[in-house]
Image (tube, rainbow, N blue to C red; front, side):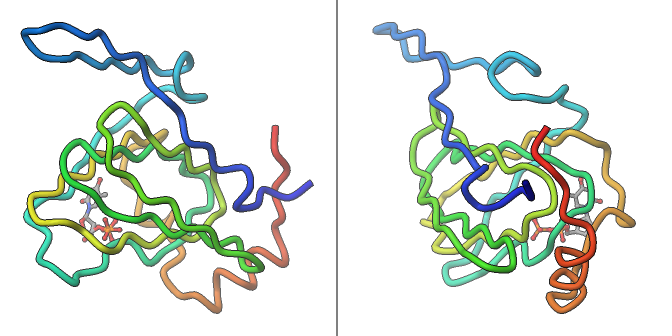
Length: 143
Ligand code: TYD
């Protein structure tokens, strides 16, 4: 079966509560189904800006609203699903081959992304029509 929007998962992360402040941790292959090869974050996003707007051939990601809030829109070429994120102990697992857009950033929002591969521009599909062709041709299965 091809990977679809329904294969995205909201994951509740461990939270160590303490009156000195809470602590959350993430281990690759334990809380998320891949080894973490890269971390990047979006911050100082102006109101009304959109980020993302691409698909990936191989990359898997785990997206966390470290601070503030934003919405991740996932598209498999047939269906779209919106995932509002606003807690630092929840993350969204995004398997490969899906188109993503990020919108509705609150002021001060920080979007941290854990990625399964180092940065590789060749893995991006930045043209939506090309993405649809890729989806029709290369419908990867859920492993
Ligand atoms: P891009 O992935 O298009 O941003 P968005 O978060 O909106 O999807 O990346 C924007 C620019 O940053 C692009 O020129 C590539 C560069 N970049 C890196 O050099 N390394 C990275 O790990 C990432 C994610 C982006």
